[in-house]
Every structure is written in structure tokens, then in C-alpha cells.
Length: 433
Image 1 (tube, helix red, strand yellow):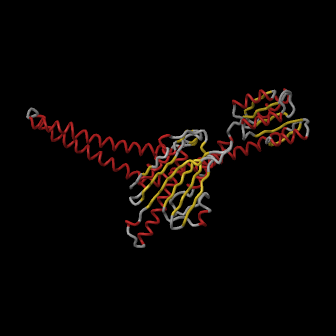
Image 2 (image 1 turned 120 degrees about the vertical axis):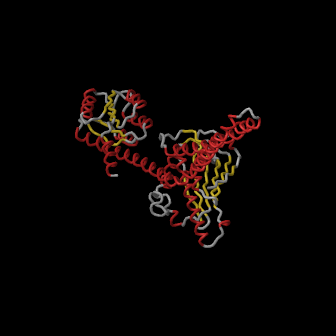
Image 3 (image 1 turned 90 degrees about the vertical axis):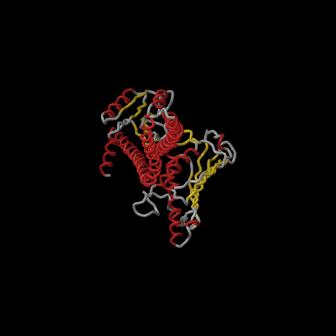
């Protein structure tokens, strides 16, 4: 772990940053370029605000250093327009003079620091280095978060691996059985080929080739399709993909794939029901939403299994130990007005043992877990919370000890289209291990 941290730190510190310099005085701009290039930074220089905006529209810039008073577009206007283009852009203003109003307006635009002319080179470098250290820390946090998300995914796959192996083993078994039968049939047919002119031999061969073999082949193909879907589902789940939240995501498809992944973990006493009403596609990240849903389904199954185990120890009949996971989704319309938004509301309910009020306040904390040591990472719900927040949504939990738990997710529906086939189409699916 220390080696990985060191590698990450070196990688970030070696990253070449781009600094945009804007000053109508050539001598100042040239001096700044030489100073910053000498520190290993990439620099771009422009003489006015309009040309600087052209750069900002097409180039990823880490720091903007601009003069306050320039002809055409002053530094304050440039700062405000630059902030629209790059929300997280760090800005340094250099000036020899300016009014208090200009200073205050520039500060409201998010200026990091002011440096007076004549420029103190040491002060400028200290300011730039401080900004870049902050950027490196932020980048490190993003990278570390990605690593945690990926680690949690791999841990989930590890938890599901036994069940997945069982799911693959079943179709593999009857594929092998059918192939062995076909081999035996071919062996038994060899003598009949030698006397194929006899009607009974010809009829027997015809029956095997036109009736029995096609059925065996169809069963084998069904098995390979099942294996392919399982492997494809795991591969898709493990793949992180780009950090884009602009995919058109069909929530029914995400849930279906999530259920498919956890199917093998669900024992015969657990039934999953899916109920959808007026479902719309949303803008989001398919793989990350799938990670959230898989985590909630796995937790629900674990909660039910733990409760059922306790009931059996108390002498309750297995027939009375029925587990239910209900996944429902519907659209809640906005309250009205220009800025209101429709929300997709998903509820994952299980009739497991529930969560105490004390623990409910901690379920979204990192590394908090109620599972035995060595089982899970304690990051599942924390990462789920972060993913839903990144989608502009909310996730909350409601629980009654002994009765069950419901996780409720609200996701904004923005620029999405309704899935016609999903409108008012409740679906129920029984899943057995």
C-alpha cells in the first residue's frame, strides 16, 4: 500500500500543469513565461481577455494568471467568464493599481490571490506551488476514491464467486452430458451405417439426426448462452468505464443485470419482486448505478439469510422462513415551477432482521459494517451514497428491527425519455438459488 501511495504521489507531482498568462504588457508576460517554464510548467500567453477566452474554450488550463486592468476586456470580466467555462479554475490576479470595487468583484469571482506589481517572483512561485499542491491533493483524493470503488467491486465479486461458479457449473454439466450422449449415439450408429440399406437402420439414424441431436444441440446452446450472460455480466460489472454521467440509462436494465449477478447468492427461500410504474430513462452512469444496486441486493440477501438462520435455530419451520426482496420504481413529478424536476424513486425493501436506530445513523459511514470480520469491506453503502450524490440524487434508509429495511433512492430525471414499454407494467420475478 505504501508503495502504491508513493507511486501515486510521484505520478501527480510529475504531472505537467498548464498555466494561462494574460497581460497586455509584453515584457511582463514574457517574464512570467520564462519564470514558470523554468519551474517545469507549460505556459500559454495571451495579450487580452478575448484571446484568453478562446484558449479556455478549447484547452484544459490549471491556473489563470491575469492582469486586472486591460483594454477591451478587463481582468474582472475575464475572471467571471472564465469561471463559467471552468468552475474549478484557480485564478491569480496581478495588478499595479485598481479600485476597491474591482478587488471585491474579482474576489467574488473566486480569485485565489492578488499579486501587486512590480511582481515579487518568490511570492508568485509560492502562490503557484500552493495552488498546485492543493490540486495534487484533490487529484490524489479522486484517484484514491476510484481505487476504493474498484476494490469494493472486486470484494463484491469475491463474495458472489461461489454462487457464480454454481451458476456456471449447472449449464456446463448438461452441456457435457449431452455431448457424452451424442458421442455414445454416434458409437452405436456405426454398425447401422454399415447396413443403412435396411429400413429399420435408416429410420433409427434419421430419428437420431433429425430429432434427438437437434434437441441436445439446442439445450447445449441454451447452456452456453447462460454462461456467456454470466461472464458478460461480471465483465461489465468489473469494468469501471469513463466518468461520464450523460448516458441514457434504462433503470429496468440496470436492475435486471444486477439481479442476474446476485441470483446465485439468493437461496430458495428468497424471492425477488420487481414493480415498475411510469419508468423513464435517466441521465447517469450505468456501471456505477449497477454497483449501487448490486450492493443493496447483496446486503438484503445477507440480512434475510441471517434472520432465517436465527429463526431456524429457534425451531421455526423452513416453510415459514420466506424471504422477500422487493424492488420498486416510479416517477414522482415535480411540484411545479420552472426549476422543479421530476424524480425517479427506487425502493429496495427486504424483510430481513432490520437495523437498529443507533446503527442506522452510521450505515453510510466509511468502513462501518455489521458483518463478521473478513466479510465485506465496510465501504459498500458509503460508496453507494457517493455515487448517488454524484448523480444529483439522494439515498436514505428506513428500518424496523425484526421487520425489515428499505433503502430509498431519488434520482433526478433530466432530459430523459420515457420508456414506453415500461409504463404501468408491474413485473414480478421469482429468483431461486
